[in-house]
Image (cartoon, rainbow, N blue to C red; front, side, top):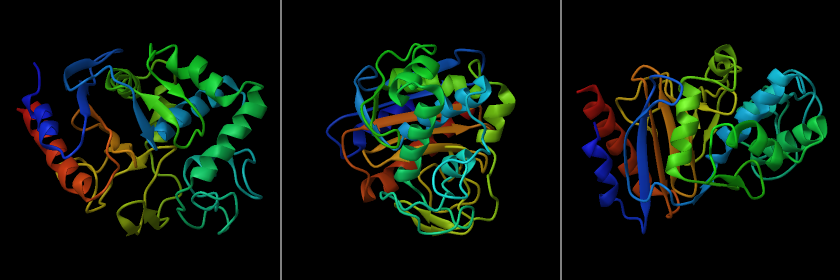
Length: 276
């Protein structure tokens, strides 16, 4: 089976795009198809964050860190940093709210998370990510070339491997992954970048949770349990547990109105075709 709906990316107003879908049915999943240059490396922007979060969860299971240990600004923990509730500003290392009070989406928070893990493990974060996640999953086309918030580079082929892992975990206990896709600090409001204020603005541990958000970058038919991330470089990765599918798209055009219009149509078409 190869999903014809993936060819919708040909209609996107972008210089280059690649997309793929993987079904949750075993350790490596079943790739239902790719379209475009699946081996081409694209800048991920914030789709870097789920990879960084997964590395943090490996460190947690290895006993290098605890989710509720202090990290980031005073009163904040590793959990706060992963869930964007540390109170740190978006791109500045300054505190704008008490921990746990608001969902303040923060690149700075993930950078402090990376620093915290590097100190705890005595391994530079990019190297820890490689050893803990990328190498075991065979993600040879992926690297972190700067900030753990936004400087990952990867391919559709590699991100489908990661999406298969998230759906059928081998590197982590399934209970840890279930926690990552469970709302942390329920009822917390905040701004979803590109879409404005949301109340609540639900988030797990490094993954955004769709719930009832509308409009949204996933599909109108995506289940409320859908989780994932999109990036300002025109990239996304979503996992829909109810559909048993994960989708990835990478482009070389910055996120904007074109993506707000095109991405939900694409995802709805993929889900409809996969469901038959």
